[in-house]
Length: 131
Image (cartoon, rainbow, N blue to C red; front, side):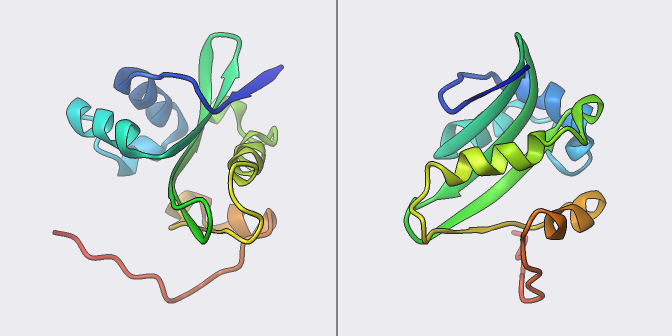
């Protein structure tokens, strides 16, 4: 049975391990523990999924809780995918937001088709600026 938590304290090492097991590590700075620690410390909504003591999923969000929530990371251990964990992580995230608050994300290439299946609308006007 998967348990979802919004108050779990996780370390950068735990998160990095999950990101590697989910393939999201291919696009995140998993070799920079300090950066990862900052990513966790500065997100203002983190929902985690646990199989007993094993971290198997995370939704890491930056939000004002009222108008917009940027879902920066949605990662589920590959061995636990296709069980509804990602969808439930999003539902748990939504439960902490105002009803009219929109969720915005940039899909990882391997997950691009997933989001439409769970109700997201595609928006071709996303832009990124790297420093």
